[in-house]
Image (cartoon, rainbow, N blue to C red; front, side, top):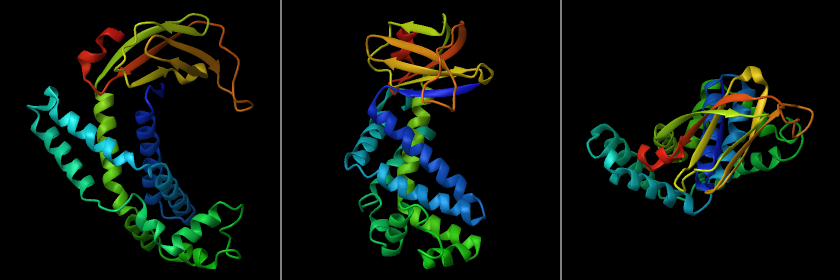
Length: 253
């Protein structure tokens, strides 16, 4: 099965984007070859740009506090401890997100050269070539050091998305001639996930608001941005998620 997330708020979209980048960074950092670490460093710069919004930290802290106050976790000591510790670790980061990278002249030079085609070749940036030739463990330590002040944000985002995805209802759905419509979506639904068999070669195009949800399945294609609408019926799962708990999403089913 393939699962396609469709955020219903910009805040959730931002959290998923940040989670995706951190997952890529962590995976690339775990490798030993210089090209993996090149991807890791490039991703670190993407994280810096995508998470630099001033209100992001406040939004995350407010949602962590809202979850801490929710009835669902009042008798869940381990989750309350995770929420408290995650919020505390994030609050202890006093600097602006990515400030330590912006203050590193060498890193910012590498960042700028990465925007130029071939800009990080040994001819263009000898110091970066030198760094790529040092021991893999040393490069990994550098990457971990440069990302250290960003990790509390990652752990907070990861926890919030874990909570969101755990508050779910799975709806078995049937799309006729590649189309599905749903008119009972509640306002406090924050994420839809469409799960379909990979063998169908189908992609869901979701249009959703508080009144109406329409899903159109198109053929997956690498030749154009949009494939042809699939003409036959499709059975799929729609996973409905909310920060407000299971009771908030039962009417969506």
